[in-house]
Image (cartoon, rainbow, N blue to C red; front, side):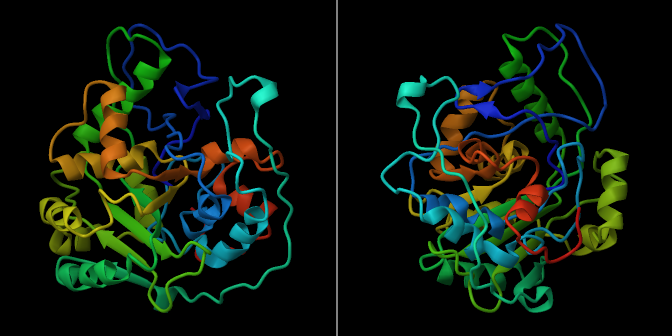
Length: 339
């Protein structure tokens, strides 16, 4: 999830270990910290660990990314699942950071083990979706989502261009208002979805759909360094302008597709506050709510079951860093360029 700025890990109530923001501030820096706590932290570890069917990111200091979204890290989704799924299933996988030690759950130590690897081929497993093949490809997703209901998600967006000005209730409010003002101002560029079953088995053949949205460099707002990095990573902005999917049309189709508003679908992501912000804006066809609590209320409606691996890593004593580092720690081979 390369476009998502990285930062401190949140507690279930919001953010922790973040500096108190200034009461008055404005900057156009493309760096920002936001992450999303898991809304379903008590589910089985096999589902929680499907993240390696999702996006690969750099270490937290890097803010942007490439057009190779999901396949960059799904090279061994089943291995990550196997490493964690052997842990006790009746225990919550993670607990609030403020929980007393006497009631903290069992914290597994994750150790790489030899497992069968699925052979991956980017050319045959990823489909680029444009306006011309949008309905055809989404029809295929609607047919397979019941059997492959674990969806690893990542987005690309045009960076961070603004900071909110004013007084804020606390650091949580400041971070959310920064997310809100940027998501309200900017447009999503790309969305990647990869599909697995509950055991981490990828959908045979095509398992990743990369949706390319309409974006015009002459008319739409963006952070220049973000666009430069996305262009270097392979995004063709001329094609996005000429053949990109209209977000309104996309919203109409996804609302009736069965992948949102569905308690049986598991959404897997990494440090994904901005990703879900852009998806919610697309789904509700209006600006994000003014209050963070209302944002999470909407999130639970449209995405009832979310696993944010950055948050879940707190319950694995020897996992740390960005998703690329986690993959390296677990001996998971990368497919596609690093971004």
